[in-house]
Image: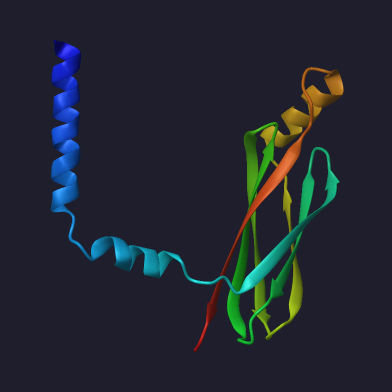
Length: 137
């Protein structure tokens, strides 16, 4: 009886939220979030042991000049976040390319590498990057 009552409450709550949302809200949200990206990135690693150097090639694929380009990178080792780093790239002309690089030096990265050396864990690293920029139409 409790399970059927809980299911009825969930269905009623879902129906009220669907009716409460305005009709044009979903179309407006999709239009703002589905804008085209003007860049392509490629990640390359330098030395990655107790410190890790992250090199990123930022390529402008548009015919607009990009200003105030910044790079944020998050490094993960074995699925765990071990550090972040930031770099200011600058201005990239149309169809141009610039390299950005930053270095992660954290205690958790050093501990992950020491665990790898001692044979307790593997050392699989991956970087997530986010590049922000401005342009004028």
